Length: 269
Image (cartoon, rainbow, N blue to C red):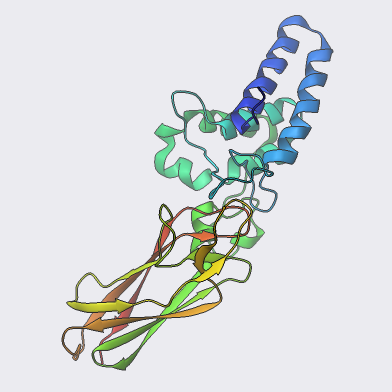
């Protein structure tokens, strides 16, 4: 019986073939590794954002294509793939795979030592990778992290229709959608919260049903612009400010980004 391979299967096999070349001196093993690397890039690379998805681009039964940089008991597939691509002189592919996890390495480097090793190998061989979070970030070599991209997919603002009703306007970037509040079981639903207020209820619009190649049934989503109404138990008058949070998971037609939360402050009427 044959099963589709995952990123880790390709990455570890390529690394093993390179090790065979180093041990035996026979270039045929490196040639096999290079041929397999072409397939790995074609099947798993996130061309737009950098790095590699865990699952094949042709997989039809997945809700989310994960992109993992953290180690389990084994090194992460992205880290091994990056080191393999460096060994095969494919430094640009390796650089993108490393750079997309740069922010995560800063915050949780102890959980992704293999990716840190890949980054150190790259730095010794190729030099520095430019990483910027400032105004010139678009000019940096590092693409947005999945979390940063998810934050940019959705914008939100709010306006009072009366002192007891706050209309939260949500705009989803074209080409993406977020799971509706009434999303199918197992999906991360869109939710609004106002932690410091006494809420009477929150009115969400019905999600639009949309069919995707990875799901047997339609999935309810929000796209474009939607409005969510927060109803308070008493009028919110005065000069205080309320924090309004929006939790969501953004997806395109083939993959989902990590779930994130945005927060804004709203002045009471």
